[in-house]
Image 1 (spheres, one colour):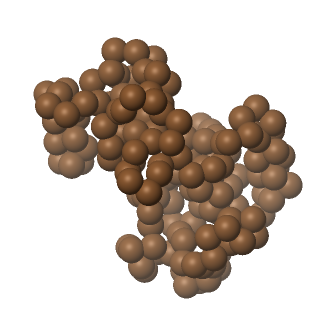
Image 2 (cartoon, rainbow, N blue to C red):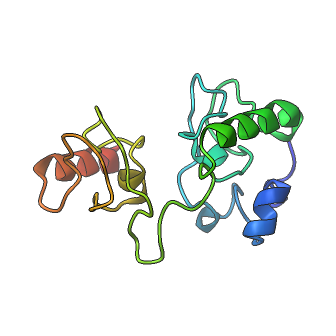
Length: 153
């Protein structure tokens, strides 16, 4: 593997963001989110934080990862297929004022798992969300308990 200071960003992501410090092991400020720990998706699904940000996995705890330069052809096919299903898949989901641009569509998670884009970003669900049985709102005891459980792990 390349040294941790080497840029591990795809060319398309570099053109958009351009900072060049994503996914470095020694710089905790470089991680927008925690490193992924995908088990079965091979890090080629949008719920992989690295893949969704168009970053290669590096320093992550994932299993059977194909989100690396060695699997670039497979990775590009996954990106193309994902964009074919959802043209907005890799666009920023959060606006400047910390609200969700399109809203989540959670059905079974109660918006209390990382599958929920709002929960993952640390914001409560808003008017644009189309979630069912949402528990990600100000004053929700379930939200308080879930955040406390995540913090303790």
